[in-house]
Image (cartoon, rainbow, N blue to C red; front, top):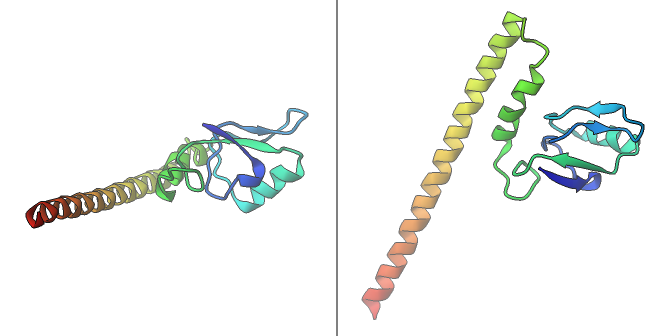
Length: 130
């Protein structure tokens, strides 16, 4: 979790703590994915800083939008535990984003492997030229 100035908040960031007005009224709950509209409303209420989850889109060391959305799904569906349709939809979304995250990780692993092989090849050709 990291506390940032509201001016640095970007759509897609996930709140690590609920945002409350100076009087104590909760404006937005923990786990909420920020949007431009919500950021503007928070700003209008007099709040100047928010706590966000680390390593999310817009934060340093971003892990990607898929992980942010997947992490926010339980929060987004929290009021629909008794609704069969909504829980089916939740399961579909959870499966979809799990696949996307796996694909993104596989893509990153391939890029790392290619970079490692090119670095090894450069070292090997440098030694052969000496």
